[in-house]
Image (cartoon, rainbow, N blue to C red; front, side, top):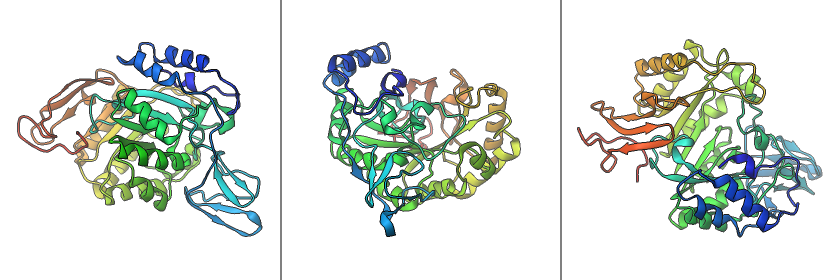
Length: 388
């Protein structure tokens, strides 16, 4: 399934879409995407396009003159009456801060969990993946910029309240739900409400995030989440400021919070030629991970492909990724993966005790999972992760 089939820029959120039209879109997008394509598209046939209901923002401060201060992310936007914050999906209505991105996802898919990517979370399963419009970063390399850099009214949205998400995930045969594609931080109200109901129905819930979120909202989300993937974009504040319009330290703080709260998480570093692939930058990242998180933290080093505003740069050479992995391995890290190069040996998981390949992967396909109750079948070493 392609995200674009559910993210059509330039069409208002309240626009009409017949059930037949949406069913056709879903069927076309699902064709050949997975073994359960027919059942999956059928699950969507009953969903009609609609204006999603507004929901009050979880964390904000009311100020004089009907202004508000957003408390969701480190930007702490000061928003005047009638205006919006940086992410574009929260509006101040008479001193009441409203989250416009709720119950109306603009991207829906049934993905392999390896695509998130997770390598230590329920290998070989699919995860029901949804997104709302908006982001608190403006990454020049964003692969989903059509939705992340859009406002809710600028993309096609589908009426899908929290209870319906869990139902559709079950119908699609997915044991989990992922909040992904865009930035879940900026639609955290929808994340919280959906995950709360989904977990009550026995589904796992994952957040795929840039980590640019304040501690209190993150702690609240962690009460309903099972795992988090953080984009560790670079061990460089300059990179965050110049390429992403953010800062590094809040992301580091979020990662340390995940460790403190004992929530499973994995890190991804998209390696972009000339911008964040210098050996000293990789050495700094590896040292920080070892000092603050420990050797068993999974790190995915993934290949960049020209996108959005960085089409002038080439794809990352495989040798660059392999050199970075060698640096991380030398630092003592035990689970360093190379992504976006299907067939590479470093896609698979190896026991840190004896070196046995315990999960064999090719791209997003798990060809063999030899783990026995999360342990190596050869030496019995427990492999950290969320396996059940």
